[in-house]
Length: 431
Image (cartoon, rainbow, N blue to C red; front, side, top):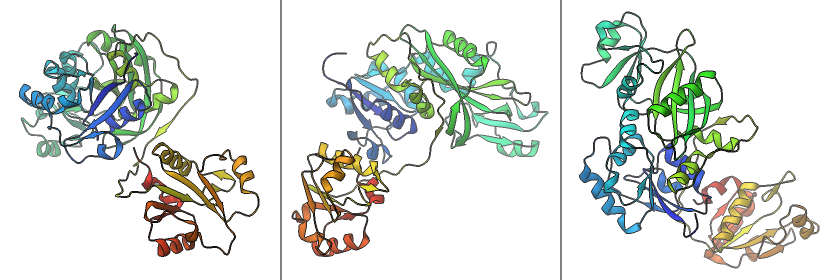
C-alpha cells in the first residue's frame, strides 16, 4: 500500500458503528479519515476532519439521492466511503455505481437480505434454527411473544407482549413488525471476518451481558460449538466481505436460534481488538487490495464494558500552557497520564509548555525520575512566598493548570486567563 494515504469518508459519523471504525483505524498511516454528518451528531466532536450538512441518506432512497450525495463529496476526492448505518449501507450498496469512492460493503443482494429480518428468515429457513414466526395474531397460542420490525436496527420498535389483549393493542396489520417466538435465554453476537476470496478466516462469539438501546455495553468472549458451523453456513449462502456479524439467542430449552445477520462490523466488536483482531481496519485493508489469509491472536480473556464518554468543543485559543508539578502532573507518586497526553497534544500543535512549581528540592531530579526531563520548554521553580501570576508572561495567550483552587483563583484574578484543575483536562482534549 505504498503512496499517499487513501482518503476515507465515514458516514454517518455519529453512530456507535462509526465511532468504532474511527477508533480502530485512526492510527493507520495508510488512511486519512473524514467524518460526514447530515445533522448535529456526535461525529463533529470525534473527528478532526468533518463534513457537515451532507444529504440525508435513508432506507429506500432513490438513485438520485445518491447522485446528489456524490456531487456534494466529489471535491474531496475520497477513495473509500465507509457506511456506518444499516440503511445507508444498503442504499450505497445498491447504487455504488453512482458513487466515486469505493463503497465498503458487500454486494447489494447480500445487503438487502441482511437488512430485512423477514428476508433473512426466508433465506435461512431450512439452513439455520429460527424462532417460530406467526403470520397473524390469531396463530399465537402461547405467550409471551416478541414484536420486531422486519427492517430496523437496535431495539427500536421491539416489544415483548405477554397476552392476547396486549398483542391486539400493539400489533396492527401493515405496521411492518413480525410476531416471533419469545426467546428468554442468553444472547450472543458472533463477529466474523471474510477475506477477499470469500473464505471465513475469523469467527468468535461473545456474550451480550448488558444491553442498552440495542447495543451490547457489557460483553466478553463466549464460545459454543455451533457458532463456527452456523457462520460457515451463512458465509457460504451470502457473499460477505470483510467484517460482519450475526446474533443468536437461546430459547426456553437452551437451543440457539437466529436473531439477525448484519453485513457490517458491530460497535462492540471493539472487544476483538484486545485479541489482536482489528475488524474495521482489516475490512478497509481488503477493499484496498490487501491479501489477508490468517490472523494472529492474543492469548488473553478480555471483557469490554462501555459507558457514556464526554467530548467537548471549547472556543479557546492559547499558545502557552503553564502547569504545576506536585499533585497536578504527579500525584501519589504517579504521573497523571491524562494530563501527560494533553501536554503531548500541545506539543503536536506547536504550543509552548512551561512547568511552574513550588516544589522543594531538586526539581530536575524529580523530572528525571518520572522520565519527564526534556518535556518542557521552560522550568520555573519559585519559592512559596512568590506569586505564580508574576511568572506567567504570556497574558491572554496562556492557560494555567494547577490542583490548588487558591492558586487558580489568584492567577485568574490577576491575569484573566483560563485556569483548569486536573479533572478539567478532558475538556481540553481534541480529536
